[in-house]
Length: 479
Image 1 (cartoon, rainbow, N blue to C red):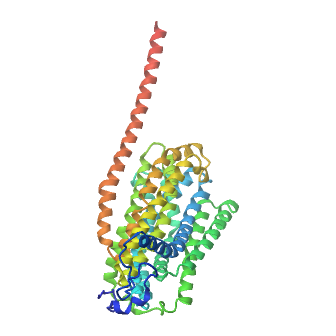
Image 2 (image 1 turned 135 degrees about the vertical axis):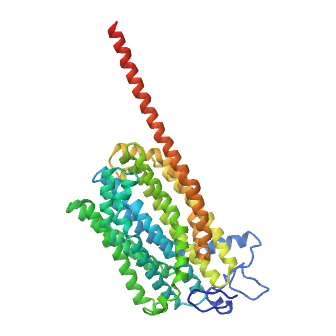
Image 3 (image 1 turned 60 degrees about the vertical axis):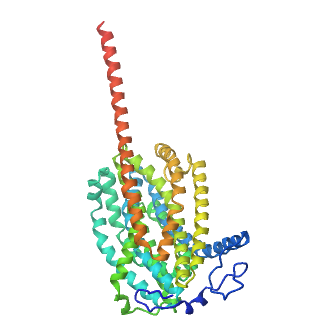
């Protein structure tokens, strides 16, 4: 079986079976030469063996990745928490900056970085270890170029929000905060390719340590800059930038110092075959970031509702919690992408298929569990983010939709990970585009417009009732 790799040599399955030894136990074929792949399942014992074998492999990769991503997302979340205790306007402004512009850029660059996941995973499975460093360097170049193209988005954040109808106070402060966070955006151009480089080799323990240390240091900096120095949102932005670049430098130092087989130094080969790499990167970006952009659009639309400070703040709190779940499943997404790409690169299609079945079933169970937790704590969890009773009540009303969303979003990222592992990003991108923007966003806009119209009708009815009461009182006085 010949499979081409971008910028690499062709390889055949005879040279890659050693990378993934056949699983021991009931699945090994007894009447044929071991190929390194699973044999077909014939009974419950086979299914049980596949289940536990795949769980151990997947969580061996997914556990550290998910922990690292949760720590990275915790940097966003704790930034919102500290700023939320300054005031409602500050909470809403920073939430808009991070949820709209930050997530827009995060989703796009994460998607473009996923091209490295496909190519590095398959190259590692094929035994072409030397190509991993080349792919990572190509991705650095492409993502830095993408950051330059996205730069006007941050510089013009305030007028963009004003044009979209956002509250002026929120738009002005959000735009200022977005500009202050520009260094963190460029850190992502290095961060995502280095993560995918390490993930492809299942070398993920160091990433977990770095993420944990960065989260602890970030919380300490937030307390120091906001509570002690009183720098408010500027202090939050400074801590955000320092944490972002700290993670990047730690990962780069580890790769250069300890990944000698995959990292052979800077090479001019990084500038070769850029266009095919760009096409795969853009397809990956469109596939992965559409969901993040969809939630960004919902945040913007809430600015048109009555009392936009409460509306944006409460929805941002719910999206923050939904983001925690999303980061967990992005970790699982990365793990299944590594498993599928490694097994396909090694010529083991049945192992790739079984790993998909196991992780989809498990992800659905996790989503249901998280929905139950949200429902049980719906009247209490908002106190973590705000002391405002009005904001807490608004969050409690949204908790039912949040719980349902957590179930629905438990499987989708896993399917995206399968597409990344197999290199099918373009197909899934079209599906996501139709689902989110042809169906979801217009429906959300109509529901929001209906809600707004209902509020206006209710207000008009109340005014008419008051006016009618006053007219009746005036008529009685005339008598």
